[in-house]
Amino acid sequence: MVDHAPTSPDANHAFKMDRKASDIARSRRARIALAHDWLVAMRGGELVLDRIARIVRSDHVPANLYTLFNSRIKLTEAIDAFPRVASRLNKLPMSGKLRRWMLGMYPSGIESLRQRLDRDHEHEPIDLLISTSSCAIKALAAPPGVPHVCYCHTPARYLWSQQDEYAQGKGLVAALRRRGLKSKGDALREWDVKTVRTVDVFLANSRHTRELIQDAYQREARVVYPPVRTEFFTPANEPRQDFWLAVSALEPYKRIDLAIEAALIGRQRLMVVGEGSQAKALRKHAARVSRQLKKAQGATGSVEFLGRVPDEQLRTLYQRARLLVFPQVEDLGIVALEAQACGCPVVARRAGGALETVLEGRTGSFFDEPNAQALLDATKSCPAHAEANCRAQAQRFSEQVFDDAIRAEIARALR
Image (tube, rainbow, N blue to C red):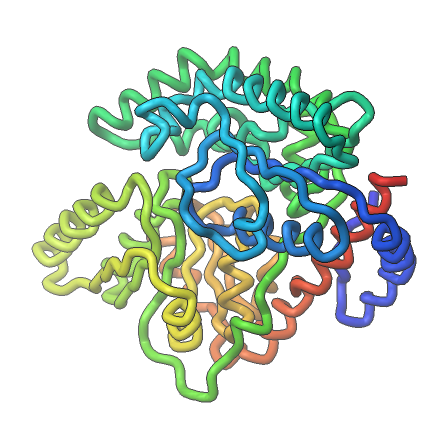
């Protein structure tokens, strides 16, 4: 199997044959449709979608963009250039913030998209379907004779690799989530495996994800690492400040609770960027732990929740933070690479995609056990003055490397 990521900057020469295939693809302007789980916010998955959309617009003819849910917000120029087609689920009152509670209805939503895609194809044929999936959209069947390439961020976490993390938590919401996954999980896993046949080629965003695809679906995948905006995320010529940074969707599996506890125990300042379903619970958790530590040890650290911030502010935070805390098991973790592109070292869980993006002792450090003390101990061995090493590591995952790989995959699919 081919991994579309060089092991060193010199290894870019290995892409000569792929670039030749890309030239062939450019000579034929195919009509290409895209598919994405949902279009409701701009996160890592949407950055990948944006890059693929740019390539399709540049080299080929854009068709529609199919999705389970469409909030109609503007995302990027390239994504917004595609006409959006949403599933029938998008018309239901629950389709907004409660879309995750509609998990059992996703198969019917995908079926409605398949019917619409078939009708669209009859009206104006497409040559290729490219999906970017971390949930269900990989199940969208292309019309007969049309290849389907799926860029897979992960098989659905709450069905396969992180069921326990999604079942954690206290209160009514956590209890309902556990009950829903227990009652629907087996049927959805069966459906998820059954619909693997709709995909002709799997592309995985990391070697870790490639293994998950093999475990869940018994299918092979080629690795194409996601694009990092190394031209935007750059170091600054100024000293770093004494604070930790966490950048994440505030969801159960992200384990921001560990970052909070470690900072408070270690009397450190932590700045948290991001929003999500656990935002309120994490604020309460930080306040509760802080009170307990003040009683026990007389002093504590501090936690600041910044919510979602503009890219320019995020870049400044990366440039100034002493380190990025990355406590989750991630499929790859583009945030860790953005931080390194800005010269910021990373303290990460020794698992998942972090093993492919963080170089121990050179661009960061690892902790093994998912607890606050292990994380705190790892921060003490995180390298200082690692800007040059961090920057070099991030550049291995640049947008140009990604673009070359995707163009090569399109060329293969259209042969």
